[in-house]
Length: 215
View 1 (cartoon, one colour):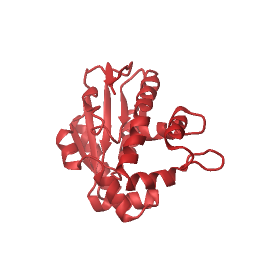
View 2 (tube, one colour):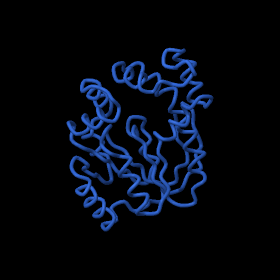
View 3 (cartoon, rainbow, N blue to C red):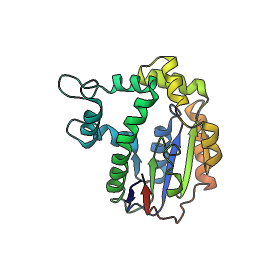
View 4 (cartoon, rainbow, N blue to C red):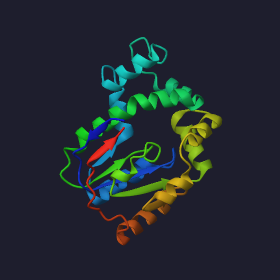
């Protein structure tokens, strides 16, 4: 395990949840309402996987040419579908990318001079939760998540279900959370919950310093 010293905002809230739950929409709304910067791990991974960037080079080294097109661009759709069907491939890709995401997190959040929201889809799977002052979990019922993933990623029901099952159960994530948002229904219902969170201040910024993450 390699320790990575992080010079982050001393107060950071993690936003996580199951695949297809709508984490990004919730994080962006909170960032706008609280006027706080939002770090989106998935968005940063997209940059890391651009040709010539560190994630792209890393995957090219471990995957060869199988998932790259004639112009050496990563075929994300092809890789995503393969990952949904192959847990060992998923683990290899995650093992390669997670250290790069941590380093990116260090660099980007070092620029923040205020508390921040950090969207980390696999927060509990990689055991990063203890480094955040608070954790907000966004969830939706399994059928809703599955249909959202199918529509978003162009995969079939079996593949979407496999992706959901590859993550830690939402019941476990909820049990660890400081605050929980049910995003199963209409966005107006979710907004009512978020407004209640804001008024109740159930996500006060803590004083815990994010000093070191180990990977």
